Amino acid sequence: MKLAKILAAAAAGAFPPPDGRTTVVPQPSERDAGVLAFTAHTVIFLDDDPEWIHATIAGLDCDPLAATMNPVFLAALMTRTGRTTETIDLLTVAPALAGPPPLPLTEQERDHPRVRRALTHRDAVRTWSAPGGLLTVGRGVAGRWEVSIEVDEPARERGLGRALALAARHLIPAGEVLWSQQATGNARSIRAFQAAGYRPVGAEILLHRPPEPDPATETRAT
Image (tube, rainbow, N blue to C red):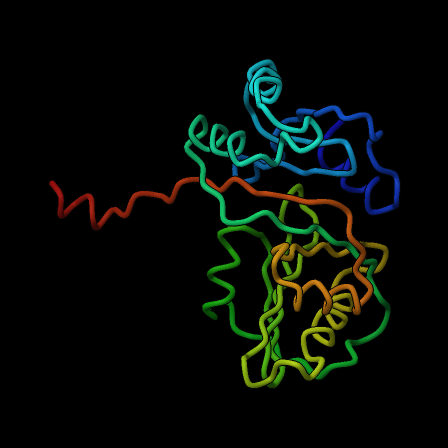
C-alpha cells in the first residue's frame, strides 16, 4: 500500500493492524523519507532494502514495539542513507472547516523568510501573519496538507496558537484534512493544536536529505 493511502485511512480513523509489525513502503518522493509509528505498527517510507531494515530491527536489544523509534535504529538509518533528522514529532490531523478564518490574516510575499524555510520541506507554500504570530500551509509528505505556526514570545499564553491552528483549517480545500507535527516535548504546542480540533494519529520522524553543495564554496575551494 502506498503511503498516501495509509495516511488517508489513518485520517479517517482506520489504522494499520496493531500486530507489532513493521511495513516498509516506497518513498513518496526523493525528498520525503521517514518512520511513522502507529499503535503497535510502524510504517517506514524509505527506498531501501526491506530485508536489511527488518534484520536491523530484529537485532536490537529492546522492546520490539519500541524498536523502530529506538535511537540505535534511527542512527543506523541515518548512517546508511546519509540523511539527518531533527526530532520525533507527534503527528496530528484535523478536517477542513468551511468559511473564512475567524482570525484576521495577512498573506505574506513568497520571498518571506518563513516561506523560504518551509520550501525545503513542502510544496505550494503560503504564509499568513496575524499580530504576534505566523502560520504556514503547504503540501508536505505524500502531498498531504501540512501547517506550522509560530507565536512571538510576548504574544504567548493568550490563545493565539490555538487561534492560528484553527484558522489554518479554513485555508485548505473543502473535504481535505490538515496535518501538523508537534515536537513531543512541546506541551504548549500540543495543547494548542488539540484545543483547535487536531487529534493524535501517531509519532513521526522525518529523514532529511543532506544539504546541496554551495557552488560558491566549491568554486572558492578549487
